[in-house]
Length: 270
Image 1 (cartoon, rainbow, N blue to C red):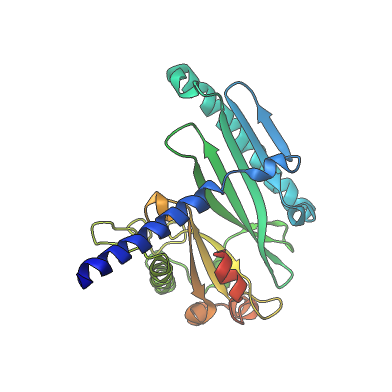
Image 2: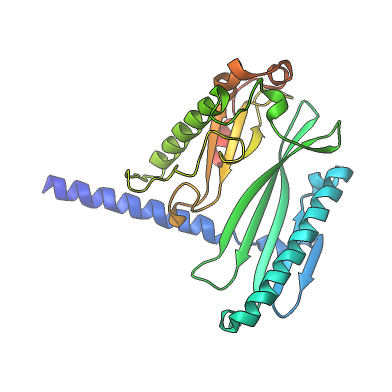
């Protein structure tokens, strides 16, 4: 009887966790569109799509222009795909046109130079459920251009020591987060099979904020639903503290990393 009661309790907790994740996903829909004017819109019978820039993005003129140009290209590409799909599968539009939104927001500013940007996409093509995706931009204010995290590392070769250490730490972090959500993976699930020790295959990365002003506490890797688990689990963020990557940092990397990850950042899952 004790075993059955324990099993029922465990099942109940897991169900609550999954339902909570579904709730989070449902609230990921683009509510801001009704609250403020988008910065770019494309609307026709096939699609209503928009791009939104947060005010801190707009305060950085070159970054704003770069983001908006990319966003407009995304609008045009999405509209073309919707039009082509309507020709071949018009039944997919029986409930109206598709609904797309892309939002750019600042995640952190480090050393008053490096700006980490989150690019969140929401798409509703009237399937089983809407979908979301996340990507990131690292912007160098001094150079006024997009960069990667490579300048902070001595080496970032595929399967090299730095990338292997980062991947190991990312997976360890994701496992901790899954445990918090009462999610248990099995070997058959292979949730991390697509993550590789390569900058292009490990996930979308940002510089995490820090308790120390002007510093970054480490790297955060952002994963949309489906990327490292079932859709119902929602999105995940893996954190790699800067102490883990310290042996692989260049002088510039050592200059910008330090401190601890703020508790609020952990709670928000950013």
